[in-house]
Image 1 (cartoon, rainbow, N blue to C red):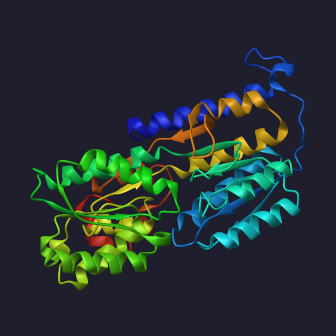
Image 2 (image 1 turned 180 degrees about the vertical axis):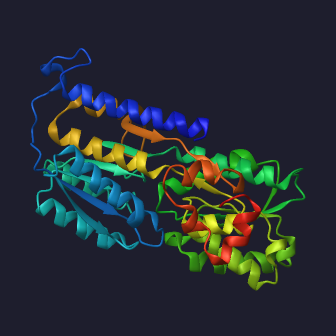
Length: 374
């Protein structure tokens, strides 16, 4: 495990220990100070709302980890009511209203549209149901926020892209393929990336991608290639996530580039297909975000909040963030790491996200061998 990932694991372990100690009335706290008397027993229900299915991590990692952690923390008596909005805000509003009607005890919300969901967040609060924003900072009276350090994600992407270019200068023409405007994380990713790219390279084309759609990303990349006079004029592509990176690479190939001619392309989420593209050299990097830590922290926050365990809750939310509607929101921000050929073993494999056999299928066996991935 890399030193940075080890620090993350230690921090999560410390948070879990704090949770356990607080639950035992330790940490030097009285029951009154910590509100140690539960407002709810083990038979609690956590509502979990995910935004879309294009990004495979929600179904493969976030949901099952949260479900497992809730079960662990509630002696297998707690449950998770799950829904995915498939990138439609109206669907998510309906799903959330159903959870309010069902009187779930707490809601973990990964918003499709952070602004548009604010009124529904207020409905939940008015009904006595705390809402914890998950992954994306929803507007409205949310109780807390758990996510990755999103500006750092963009910084890591931008910095790694500059490093890939070597002697980057303004003659290097970059295409920016940003995320959806309805996702507040997109602006933070871009802000972080621009802190590394601005003044060092030329942004030749810049797109915001509706609903993080790979199809739209491919169409926009095709437009950029035409505008720039051919795929060979593209020095690098900043793609905000892996699904769009795959689409960008398809557009570059359709424009005549071979794998060996592919410019550096960034990504995010360490999707299996992206890791395989990194192995083969089609995609330069992704951002590995340790989902187990974030998902486990979210489950622990939700359970502590329902039980009225303020000390436990506060030990898991030591950061503070602001949204357009609320200031000083308690938060848990998890750090991230750049994923390249050089550290696949020490990140996604060592952390148990993938096995070598998952990555090194027949198509990628030779490329895996060439980087010592066996």
